[in-house]
Image 1 (spheres, helix red, strand yellow):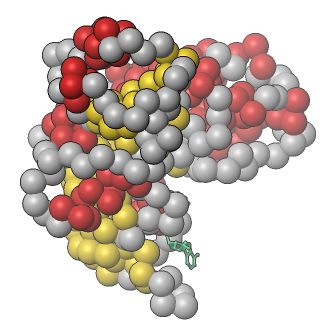
Image 2: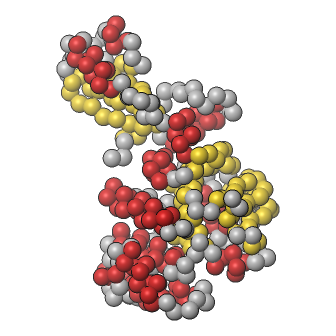
Length: 325
Ligand SMILES: Nc1ncnc2c1ncn2[C@@H]1O[C@H](COP(=O)(O)OP(=O)(O)OP(=O)(O)O)[C@@H](O)[C@H]1O
């Protein structure tokens, strides 16, 4: 299949000398959901801003549906919708006027039927006459998506669509993205959350320090990196693990009150049930339990540490983030 976006040897050096992108090569397939994962400052926003023509490249080329983003700016930009990171909306304009205006900016003919369908799809139709300032944060995010889709682009870029939003709204966003994919839109989103990429992406690109460290099919990547920990807090601290418990890949905290079990979420069985049984049979009573997932930072550490070596070799993560459910 022809790539809908083709990026070749793309580099960006900002004024002041910071190199935000280093020789990026990437082909985005039509109809896919691509998640670009990376920590703060990795270069994700710079990358999508360059494709959208907001940031000018220092070297390299980008084509969108075979249109060069610089030589054929209008043709390429018309195919793109961009949902920025910040909630950049006016206050007193209505939802309807906002998206109508956006469509007009692209020189597209009025199409009330399409815009109605779009607002209905984003459950914004009953808010169409509301002023933007009266909307909740979640609704404003939907308006930004409606704005970005108002001119019927083939490609949608979402910059950190769920940063700082609650779990409910995050799931809502994921559903919106899935439906858009079904309607044929190619979606590229940036995120800090590996779970987000895991949930909705077809492919995942990992960016760090302006470099595309890897780009891989989600399923294959998650198999390599999908590791979780179960932390079991016990009522009475112990000094050593029983022989029965030592058979599992568990470790005991220094104060003897927590047993951490590392398991692979992709396996047939996690082994949690039998571990809990073993804890019980060892005469220990549970106080509390939680699961954590390797953070993206850990994954970077592993990637960089492995230095191109066998990424199947898991290392225990030191930084743990609470599982975001
Ligand atoms: N206009 C600019 N001028 C100079 N440096 C910039 C500019 N914009 C971004 N940078 C720098 O380029 C690097 C990449 O920034 P970018 O915003 O692309 O990262 P990001 O991966 O999107 O991060 P975040 O997740 O925080 O949005 C950062 O070090 C940033 O400080």
